[in-house]
Length: 104
Length: 104
DNA sequence: ACACTTGGTAAGCTAACGCTTACGGTAAGT
DNA sequence: ACTTACCGTAAGCGTTAGCTTACCAAGTGT
Image (cartoon, rainbow over all chains, first blue to last red; front, top):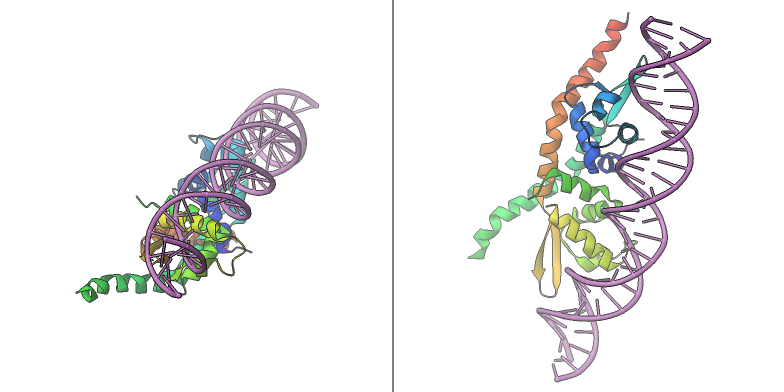
């Protein structure tokens, strides 16, 4: 199951965000993702596994290489979770604007 | 400065999410937040400090107690960051729908 | 068949994180 | 003034997370 908890935890890591942002430019094999990053290729593999289990990316075998791309599922889960608090945040903001009026 | 990195890292922790969700029901003092949670009050204080520095909550002194509430700033930052990938995700999803058609 | 490329996995280490206990500091009540 | 309630901070500890090196499996080309 893909809940918001895993998705948020996955995107909390800087290296994982870097990988995710790189995939936003289009699907890529693991080696190409690792190239230019500060960590080794096995580290990237581990990160991809975490992102995959969080529903943020999906892979697709193509010969000896695996093409990774962004999976909309994870993003949708996070967005749904965020929307849960959006009205509360807006109410808080509205109160923020009206508060100075009460001050006088 | 409040960037998406800090906000995501802050919401990655389960206890911090629990605190944040509890604040969605309305502003509360620290003691009331800690009541019912599995951790001690100082732990809650530390978590609140992290959430605050991420722009997710804000506090307001009221006598000897400090009232915490959700700050829309952090949520907005995360949402803006997510929207950066939203079109990519939609394109990926669209391709997902049309791919079976090409299969035959 | 053999070599090479590609990538996932295991083992182990280090650093960071979250928690607790203990303490200090401020405001309110008596 | 003295006590009590409320909360932040420091110090210390155990666990986890991310990284590296080493190894293994599968596919491709010659």
